[in-house]
Length: 451
Image 1: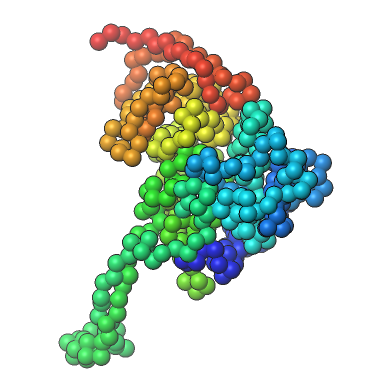
Image 2 (image 1 turned 135 degrees about the vertical axis):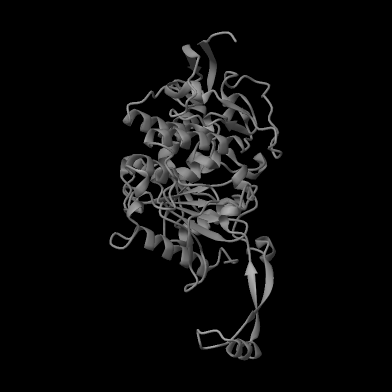
C-alpha cells in the first residue's frame, strides 16, 4: 500500500486489528488488552478526545465517566526541533485545552495525522506525550514517566509515525515506489498442461510462452535504522511495550501484534510474516521466557532459548541494551530515563523468578560480573561513541557513553569461571520516585588476583 492514509488502507488496518483481537477467532496471544474496555485504573492521567478532528480536546481521566472503560490509542513519533512543538501542553494553556479544546491547525502535522487516524479507526481517545504531559512541570513529568510502560502496555494500539523525522512532517503522505528499492527480472513463462516434461512438450510449451516479470524488493526485516523512528532512543521501549502497532514506515503500512507482522496490502494479497523491523514486542519475549519449558515446543518464529529461561531473560536484556545504544537522544541526560520502562518490566520478571532484582545504572546485581563485559563498538559509524561532558552514570555502566556498545555473551555453562568477586556496588538515584531513572553517583569495588 502506497496511499497509507487513504480510507481503503485504514479500512484494511481495521480488518487486521479486528482479526487480531476477536474474542472467538483472534490470536490467542493477543487477547491481552484485547478487551474493548480499559480498566479505569489503567488509564493515563490525560487523553486527547479525537471526536472532532478539527478541534480535539484534552481530557483528564480521573472521575471522568466518559473515559471510564474506554480504549485508547498511543502515538510513538520523533519530536525533531523544539519549534515543531510550540503548542505543547503547559501550565499556561492546560485549562484552555481542557475547557475549550485545541485548534487543530495550530498543531504539528504528525499530531494532526495521529488524531485523524485515531478517529478513522473508530476510536475516541489518543495519548501522546506533548499534549498529555505538562511539559513545563517537572513534577508532572516525573509522575507520568514513572507510568510510561503502563501507558503503552495498556494502549489498544500504538500508532508508529516511523517515516517522520520531525513532528512537523506528518506521516500520511503517499509513499513513493522508488522508496521500495525494487528491481525487476524478466522471466519466460511456458504454457503447458502436462506435468511430464519431454523434449517435445518443452519445445511446444516454449513456443507458446509469454515473457513475464518478477519484481524483487527488500522485506521489512531487512530495514535496519532506515526510518527516523528507528534511530530515536525513546521509541524503542514505546514500540516494544505495545501489544499492537500500526507502523507508517517510509515504504508502506505495517500491522504488527504479538502473533505476526503483516504489510497492509489489498484483500486477496495479504502477506503475513514475522516482522523483524524493530524486533519482537516485549510481551512476546516475556511470554517465551515465562511459558516455554523446552526447546522442542518453540514455534519456529520465536526466539530460541540458548540454555534455559533464565539465560533467555539475560540474553534478551543484553540484546535490548545493544539495540538501544545504537539510537540517539536529544537530551543525553535521558539515557537511563528513556530505557526505564523496559528496565522496570525486566525487574518485574526478575522479582517473579526470585533472582537478584537490584538495578544498578543499567546493570543487574545478580549478573553484574557478566554485565560488565561490554565494550564500545567503534565500527558503528552513524553515532560515534563519546562520553558526555556532564556526569550521567558511573564509568563501568554502558549508560556512561553515547554510541553503540557490544555486550559479550558469556553463558553460565561456559568453562570460564570468574576470578573476580563483587565486594560492593552502590548507585544513588537522582530521584527516588524513579528507581530506574537517572543516577547522580555510583561506585564499584571488585576483589581479584593480580596477573
